[in-house]
Length: 258
Picture 1: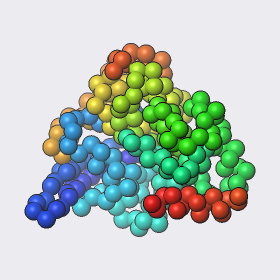
Picture 2: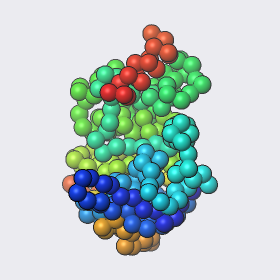
Picture 3: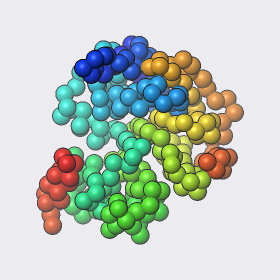
């Protein structure tokens, strides 16, 4: 369960203060699929980052399964993200110096009691689930946009998260790749009960959600439920065509710090 209570967030520069989130309050139940829509600059991505513990609000409560993430230090937040959260960035955020299977395994290398062999086996299984086993040893520059997105999704799945946050997961993808990405996310949501929170500009993606939160100028202006949404993964057809473990861990940490 995710809950926001009276959350405010602003950014400051030399000349002004920009209020990005203004008194945001909502609750998302376990297993829900919630889409967040609204024009560019409305605060959607900032809200997603705050929800995932990647950024902290100025004031307010952000609770994940009863834990107020605003009160946790960075070490505890890192553990929380590794244990419960998957995040899919709009620009993929794959580390260029790591191949596909190494990128997928990052959450396990950074926080895991698994052995090298166990991490490799789990990463291979996740890659297979997104039909990317044949690209396991390829680097990001050798992948297409759709392939990079599938690797990013596999990485978000690898730690078996309770909740997945996705920022424009189908942006700039063709129809075929968009459908593939949504099929993967919907399967995780419907068949495995993973909570799914997606920022999107695509109304056809929003139609697949249980609920739609609409934002404007840093505020939620509507919270509606999709009454006729199909529960089947096939509903996406309606979308418009629009070394050692330590050595690897050190390598991954160096890549992440660049």
